Image (tube, rainbow, N blue to C red; front, side):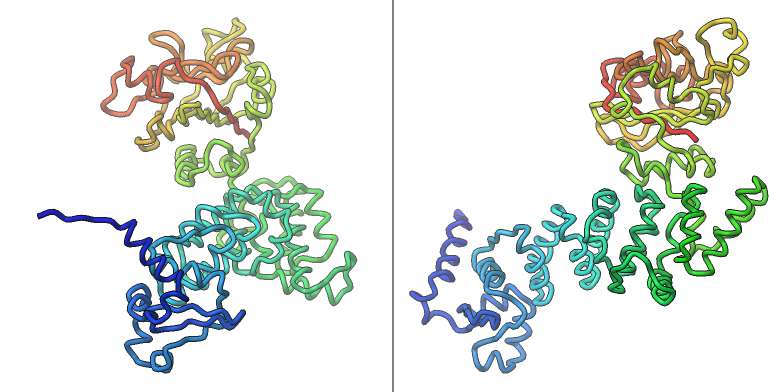
Amino acid sequence: MENYLNLEKLSNDLKNLFQNQNQNESYFDFEIICEQNQISFKAHKSILSSRSQYFKSLFKSKMKEYQENKMILKDVSSSILFPILNYFYSGKIEINLENAIQILIFSSKYLIDELIQISSNFIKNNLQIETIVDVLKLSEAMNFNQLLNSSYQFISDNFNKFIKTSFFLELEENHLNSILSNDLIPANEFELFQKIMKWGKHKLNINQKKLEKEEKKQLQIQISNIIDKIRFIDFSKQELENILKQDLIPNEISQKLIQFQKLENENDEKELKQFIQKENQNLNSLIFKPRIKLNSSEIIKDKEHIKKIQEWINDDEFFYKMKKGFSGKKDRFNSQKWHNKCDDKGKTLVIIKTKNNCIFGGFTSVGWTTDKSKWSKENRNNSNGWIPDSNAFIFSLRNDKGDRKPEKLPIKKDSKEHAIYYNYSSCGPTFGEGSNGGCDISLNFNLQNGCTNAGNYYKLPKGLKFNSKESRGYLAGSHDKWVVEELETYFL
């Protein structure tokens, strides 16, 4: 006994049956009419009920449409209905940027589970700035949480482009609130504040630049539920002074900003810190909580990686205030250029991505300094030398195969004198010492080549043996055959 399967022919035969309705009119027992353009399609009740739970329930209940053998649809055009009915028969459908949202809407209303999955996946994989606001509204209304989360992530990843478009002004208040609550959006807070003012005016249909007293009051009410998501702590002193003069911020927040400004001008760091800590206890207000500066990273896109770095550094004041001070792509791959920008900065975070997709780096609480009094005693009379740091660590976020968990490798207790190495002319960021198998991390003068040998001065994960093939390739996939794609350095 043999079983034969020819789904392609079955699909084509059923498609031809549906598409050649005029020739097979007597075979059909149901008609669907599009009220928008009065175009109708013939179908079979058995096909409709087998492909849609909505039609199955409709026919089972023997309602008016079942009795009259026809149905009028007011909410769909023939250009959308035809491919869906064709899919019912053939199992094939072409979804594109023009019809995906309407197919998803129709499929959701008429309970076509397969098409809901197909169309929502297409939209998720083809999100665009021009339609993202519509997708947000739809995914929330239809409880498509996965699509909703993907939409928010898309906006975060494309925030600086999105905020410059008119589509930003069409956001609903709750969507804007969620977006602004995200610590990872790469926002210039002062520019974002100006955009929020523009959004509020748009919602109120206020066109003029200079506002009267009543219009200012209306604008304050309009933005009252979102303005506390602006991170005013990231404003410069001049920017904060300018916006307070405009008298556009609700009074409750304005008074807090004036108090913050007063303490900042008095240089009372202890009082200012206590004030910020107290205000940040209010979880609904984010005005004194800085955004995470790693949001500007071209290397780290995974939220879990960002959380790991925050956990490892264990210094929120540094973590939230640090800024990207060097980018190899932007500032050119050259060790002297790196030193010119990154020396004498104190706490420093280095992140490296190689062309084989490894992501690793290191942190020093001292930094690469020209102050030789901070060097190890053995090197203070030399032009190059090691710098002690008992808090330094190196880390791996991603290996070349992407199959290993992030790992922190702290400095060994007896190695802190040689935590990092300073060489202005020949080396970029270097962790560990070059003897006994090579530095744990070292970048050459061109910042695109170097070597790794984890475990020399920094602790290896359990199970790995120092100077083995595995330890030498633990960070970058190999000891010295890797090439840097991007190098980022962060400090205060």
